[in-house]
Amino acid sequence: MRDTLVLNASFEPLSTVTLNRAVVLVLQDKAVVEHSHPALRVRAAAVELPVPRVIRLCRYVRVPFRRQAPWSRRGVLVRDQHRCAYCGRRATTVDHVVPRSRGGADDWLNTVASCAEDNHRKADRTPEQAGMPLLHQPFVPTPADAMLLALRAGERSSLPEWLGRHGGHRAERHPLAPAA
Image 1 (tube, rainbow, N blue to C red):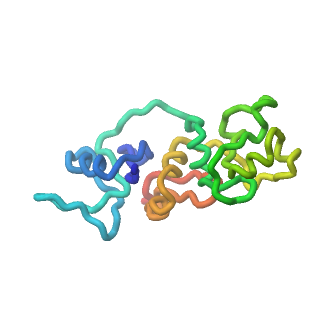
Image 2: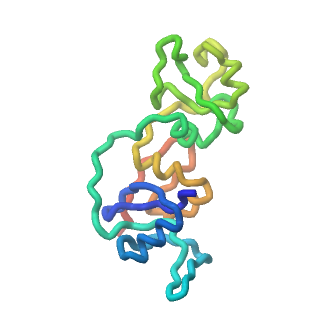
Image 3: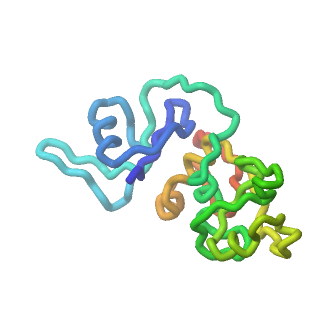
């Protein structure tokens, strides 16, 4: 599991890594622990360190600018927190608001998470034609939003306040650096 969030030296989210990778980065002095699990520790023969939840790289890594996260089916399920946009139950599929057969695209604003029953019931119709209103509107997450939403809900809720919380179905923009 990729449960440790990696921040750039400028505090912007870069990726998530395994606990082992996070510990190696910290032990090699390539990263520092910004937020750790309050009760758990990693122990080895000559070292003991808190279990990192968020690490920050010591040196800035230049990354190509991306205005939005790349679209994917998994990304839609994560963005919608695996909740059906029609009934709110657990979602396992992705539905096109405007069906592909009618010119609907594979993009963030035309896809929502859906349970298999509602996806089948809506079929090749728009939500209005099927009488199935959306519980929330699809949106385009920023790369930082996508990174934070990809963390498990329990991991997200334990992040420090300054990093931002994504509680609803709409990602909010949060400052990524601690307040002075």
